[in-house]
Image (tube, rainbow, N blue to C red):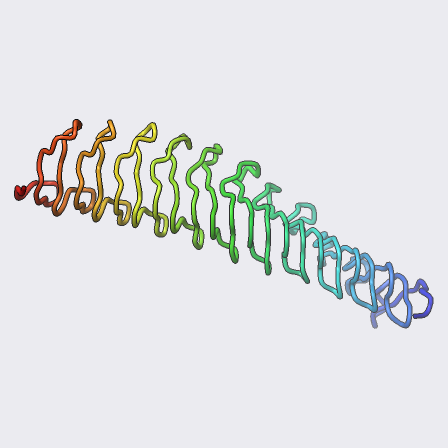
Length: 276
């Protein structure tokens, strides 16, 4: 490679196209590429064989800063910062792989508040990360992401920072085993299976102070199937079938001291037949 020399090139209409260092007839080293007006800078940084390569800044046609960071053959790569249209507010800052967000990075809103901090893959949230409330400080979700969605184990929070839930997520909703908390984020109100964000499958619901209320099968947030309902002192109140939160099918009802009150068939909460 011949020794670098400083030089300029022009568009056919005479407007300045490039000013910087050359070698072997190509831009190599520090330089500036201009838009067709010959005034507005399109790129300011390092070149290799006419390509943006190394550290540099790209600008929009209105002169606002678009990107600053590392380049590889005309494409943002390794690490850099993207800006919103105002050229001042950061949109994304972090790792990149040939223009796409890859590795650890932070995403910001137009008002400058932090929206997401965590891992990326193929330009999508993927891996461990945190979502933030619009204040940019309060975490509203922390856990796994896949292909842009909350997916895998994670915890969600109210905007005051108290816990809402934790468990397995699928495509942005709780799905699988999970735990739900009360409004204070202190006491568990449900521990069990969830489907598309609702109680479905086997699970336990709790009264305040972690006292079990019901253990058994659920369907669409209601007690459905076989289960056991408890008195506040922890003794069994009812065991048997349920339908939409009501006793249904065969079941046994007990006093809070454990004495059997009734064993027989039920229909939507009403006794219909006695049986021994």
